Image: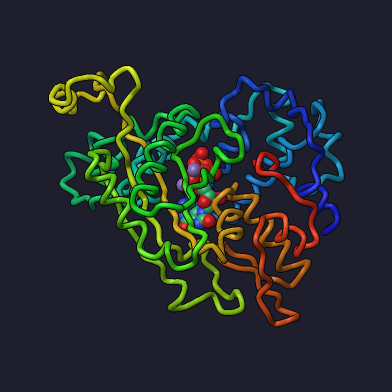
Length: 377
Ligand code: 8DG
Ligand code: MN
Ligand code: MN
């Protein structure tokens, strides 16, 4: 089965046609039946079930032929009983009753609205839902004290739930690069996340920042946010310092997906092109009306990595989350290695393996290199 997993997850042919019956290109991702069930499981806090659906959904997307009947799926990995039943339903009836029921349930709808607020996780949303809060209006009148992230999330709710386009990501890149290079000349800014994988839209824009002289990057996030603030484009930020040196993962025993880089979860103000020449006073006055102001809020993640960990950080922050998960599982189960966004530890040799490129990391793991656009699992 390990060979099958390897073939399915890491050695897909370069060109693929989507399983057309289940995934016509015109169908938005959120309507893909198995993705709805995965999301619903996530919103219930059922991680195991969510991953199972995510894996079957990714497998279907990876097929190089149309799926006409479940019989064709025989022998494929990652497809459990439940997923097969859903696929059967979609093939037979054009939709799955379970998926339709899920989508119309008040719980699913409320949880989607509430977790759609930046700063609100499943646990908080669940608590609010149990108290009868189903909408933003109900939350606002509930008297709950929101933390700064949630306040910003509510304030910019509409903007942050509107997907970021590639053009917008490019415009944000210019702003971030200018800020980074003005506070630390020679620093390198790399677009990571979904946009590096070639996606045409995303929920945020992710940047990885490093400097060729190790050490120069320390404390960079604060300087960058100060610069963005002075330019009036920083709407919200929460900075975390680097804690890797204090307690490195130690033989990869860390169970958490969170890494320990210096980073900043922020919301930036993206001034729309045609509006750039407008009178700044007018821009301020427009702030209250999110519909017609000449800028929009965009979620931006800034991550700072020392150059010696850069390849691992880039691999980790390029995603997708499912791809990272599968790769880390492969490392542990097939190679007895621990892969993180900081390092690769060989449990047999009892030493860290260094890498200065993603290619080297794939090679250490005995895997064929997969370019970012092949990591959209
Ligand atoms: P999207 O924004 O278009 O929705 O997709 P994405 O770019 O793939 O997702 P993301 O949530 O922005 O995450 C990008 C990658 O960053 C993802 O593969 C996971 C990785 N990542 C880490 N560490 C951490 C972390 O601590 N928090 C988060 N949210 N992501 C992390 O390596
Ligand atoms: Mn992203
Ligand atoms: Mn992100």
